[in-house]
Image (cartoon, rainbow, N blue to C red):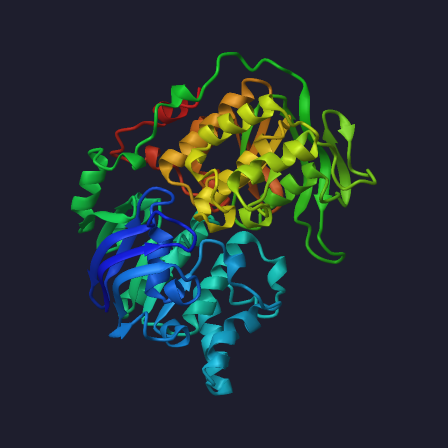
Length: 516
């Protein structure tokens, strides 16, 4: 089905190849897990299979890629799109219709299918991804996870022979992940060839038939799941193993009682007559605390963050930042003390180079000088993006773009940092490095509030874990204690941490102690 010979590829304007001498043979009906460190070339490899490379992206491509007998360099993109459908890391990169059913119908309409067949494909695709009652919903009103399901449905409606998925679960809650993974598995069992890019290998390895690991642009491991996981667990692939956490932790105790963020009886609805997204939320976060916020898609997590930035105003209740009520301020932002990192980093990146992106904020605040330059260098080192200094941010992988966006906020030195899904698109080492650095900043009095679907990361790198369901906070406590409340986790659509499963050699106390 897919045959790749001696593939080497270099992006336009770059001198170093992103893919290097890749050779792969994937027969029809195989389910391949493709994993590896952030920026190793996984997404690029998928784009060579569906023809985006070289037809739309350009660059220098050597070697040969064939899909279902078609040479991707000779076949046009429209023909290839009917054979190999691709789901991107960010659903906003491929959703363009304003109504859900129009988005799913777009592909079949362009194939000139009869009306009844188009309607049938739309209904079936939306039903399989759990959006069966969303036909007339506005796409901009969907949560990040719901948008990802819509993107999958729009590709499934084309009935491709090959399904390429670039971290499709990054913005899904565990329940949504399980549902979509089950759907993908069913498609594979019915004969569809699947290549899935994913960092959370232990959560998907049970459904795949083959595991490939990439590093530095090449395939460094290609084996059946059991043997591949054994090699990985033996430390042969170090990117999957956590780094020395102590390198990120700073001395000092968190003993401040000053309130940094507070909600008092906050309720919120996006439109009059619509359901309330937040329902009487009360929340207090102290200066220097690191708080993780979990819950299923649509539970209100991002809405809470947006209230603390001043971008949203409560329908009822008060929002306080360092004791100041920002609920009725005329300006949309409370102050420069709050930094916010969006779930989609593309919304934040607009400069030509990584360095310019990170330096933009300090310059806008009038903070230029040798000291600022050194601070930016230090932040780039902490975010592991030093080698990307002169690269265009939007030409980077999804995980790299997110780290650049976070660095651009850190460079302005906010007292409060809000992050919406900072673990999305990150391998384990990058996640620990990123959150470990933020945990270190908290010991200097910086307050951190982040949403995540990664419960192990929440246990490891937060002082406190909040769980939301239906617009309310249903659990609030020490991460270890909350993680043991399986009834509460299941109510919120969350899975218990892997470290609690029978036979796991790393206990929950060991994981939580690594965060300090």
